[in-house]
Length: 209
Image 1 (cartoon, rainbow, N blue to C red):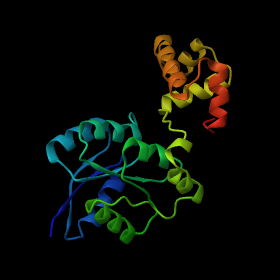
Image 2 (cartoon, helix red, strand yellow):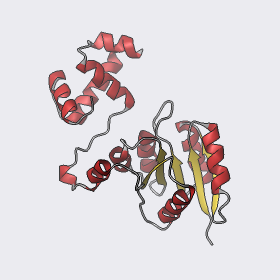
Image 3 (cartoon, helix red, strand yellow):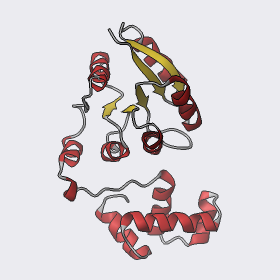
Image 4 (cartoon, one colour):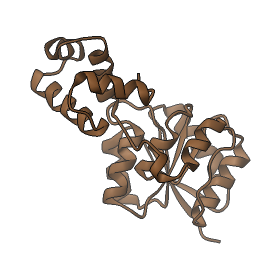
């Protein structure tokens, strides 16, 4: 029986340790490493070559979705399964390259089954996800609003909607005005808009704010 090499990524030590103890009860699974933030993840992937990465979304610094996106660019063979408390990032996670999306309150046997499914080339989704989220993922590509904004970009978008100036945004987020201007430009590009009023209007349509 092939051993499935797993890397556990979560910023909470108790979660990592709990997952390790649970997974290593299975004869065909080995947790080869743990990581709490992006720098550790890249180093562990280079060193340990895990087949499956269990990835949290909400982490300090780079979030799990952007981390997945960058990992898939550098290591396309990595299979990332999101393991999170939140169901609202399903589409962004799959678009970033995740092969599965599971909620943390699933049963142990469901997690084990999902890991084995991914190892066999399948792409499981947690059946406890809301029907709206699953329907959004299943929609044809032309009907999807393909978009991913980082947490910083979303924060800037909210402040734009509140009427904040570039300087006010920079002060509130402890950024330079140049950095804010670059981020606003990226937000405009991702939303396909030309100015702040169009950005706010499009954000409301996409339910981003």
